[in-house]
Image 1 (cartoon, rainbow, N blue to C red):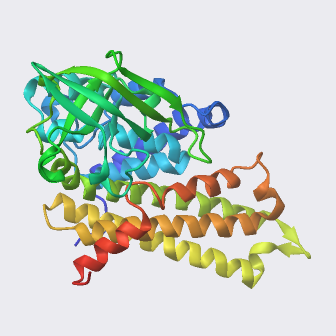
Image 2 (image 1 turned 90 degrees about the vertical axis):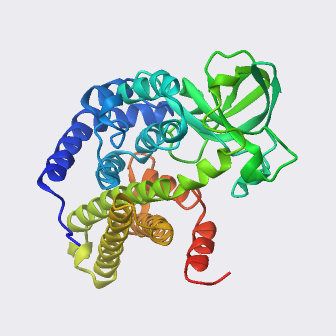
Length: 381
């Protein structure tokens, strides 16, 4: 396996990094305070081809591989993981099911404008009583002539407050098992009966707008069904490896920034007559942070490479997601110690890295779920 990026990938990384530094970094403080996503970024990134980079050229995508998408996500997360998260939904679970299983009309209506940044996508699966246990959802879509009538609610929906369309997982046949009874139906903003009941106030990831969605006798044309009726949960399960790998890339990007900031501070902060980084207790913290960040990167890009090769990678995807998220959390904890009182102050970004890191252990499958998958893959459970 070649561990080096290709020349094209290096150029892509440099161009994304330049864009992120010039166009995203100056917005972070303002939009963190507003707890909003800077919507204009969707069109800017769409115009440059930075949205949905793995999608086919015939729809406006770059036709790139998952390694390339991980490069993109890592560079965005180096600047702000909330913004990276919203972009990941756009090119991931908020649209890939349409690309993979939708018909041509649906692709033209949703995929093409999503790639351009003209429409924002979201995916509605999680409910108040259904998180890791996706089959426990209660939302239902009942047939009524040429329509589905959707009733239910979804919570913790990334991009929910700002989406133009949402892919909704709902029961269409409760008499069957979940893998044959749950469907995915796309619902447009403005459809009667569909509303964002509230924007959720989170501990971190403030620039990733998250909401609770409610469907009350929401009348949706049956032509909005994605793929086959009853196959929605299967579609979702097939897409999980991809999402776990890109979330690992996000953790790698965030961990790199945490390490860079902690290294810089340890060289500048002088106590007892010398930089604190010269103290073994601090130097060892930073050495371990560097090692774990590099290990997380290798796990992540190996999993992405396997995915691009069309090879089985469930174990590797879960390992990458688990290790990278835990490395990020450890790095943020250590950085808080290194910065001391300054780290706890809101005027310094370290507290944001610390707050944002916790979400990486929960989203896209908790650490416990990843360990269950790994245990199964090695012949246990």
